[in-house]
Amino acid sequence: AQKITQTQPGMFVQEKEAVTLDCTYDTSDPSYGLFWYKQPSSGEMIFLIYQGSYDQQNATEGRYSLNFQKARKSANLVISASQLGDSAMYFCAMRANFGNEKLTFGTGTRLTIIP
Amino acid sequence: DAGVIQSPRHEVTEMGQEVTLRCKPISGHNSLFWYRQTMMRGLELLIYFNNNVPIDDSGMPEDRFSAKMPNASFSTLKIQPSEPRDSAVYFCASSLQGQSSYEQYFGPGTRLTVT
Image (cartoon, each protein chain N blue to C red):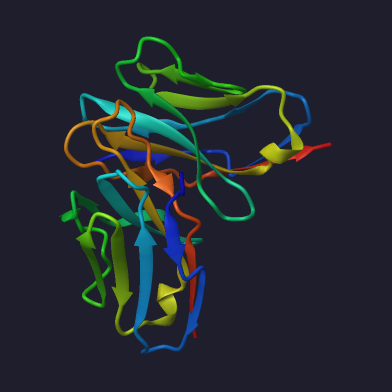
């Protein structure tokens, strides 16, 4: 079974500062993928970034980067130079790479950017 | 390209009525997912299809829920009879299995209220 843990229910960050959202996971699958999604107040789920368990380098997508520490089973999302539009719920998710494609989601972190 | 399309966007119905939610995946995608989001349970997978075949329906709450995918461009999720505890946001997502990450793209969701 897969499990995702997000221990920060809410965070407040000053605009233009960097922010790290924590995510730890547990799985017995030898190969897996980790994802981050953003859910603004409008409700849609927006894909942000993906990290494969065998990827040698941490994933980056614009201002988003994923701090992947396999031994510690953590996949933290880092947002650089935060903007007011980054205020949203952020979900970490995991999928096994073979067999079942379903995503297992964490409980989310509500990020609020303060002007 | 059009994203995942869901209809209706909002549905209000009375307990005991039949509800049908509809989804059109992204053209060319071969996997389709139905998720439910509630405050109490977060985001959870109900069922997913690959090449129109149901692969994992372990998340379907009970016999009142059924899902079909008659062709590659259409799926339905039906609740009969509906109950107040079915009130939630229902998301449809699609992905293209075979890509390295095959991230799931979500539709805008259907907000269901059962009174």
